[in-house]
Image 1 (cartoon, rainbow, N blue to C red):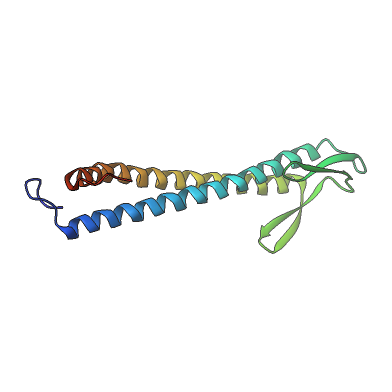
Image 2: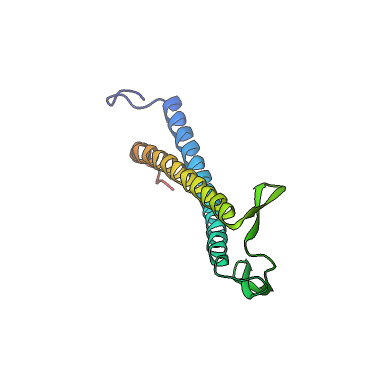
Length: 148
């Protein structure tokens, strides 16, 4: 930016507005990623809770099995000591219950690590926005135009 005694150039003003817009777009993108990740974390947490309950179930025992958000079905488990877990978007593998729980726990840890990183990035972006916002408000005051 120009020195405080000189008014900012049109180029400086445009650059500041551009940076602000880019940061706002990044903020929106990070918030959206966090919302999607929260959904994934809820789903994996539900899976973990469900699998943890399998250790108390005997074969052919009737259970109430969650099949999605607020939806359940009655089922009889043939072998509750075996679970099938996803290892990629199109590949499943059968594991014993303990190994399946470990896989789910590692996935949950990974998601939480990603969440921490995204929250850190969001904090950085919000900090930069907070630094630029007063400059933009000052430019609006100087121009006589009310900010949106």
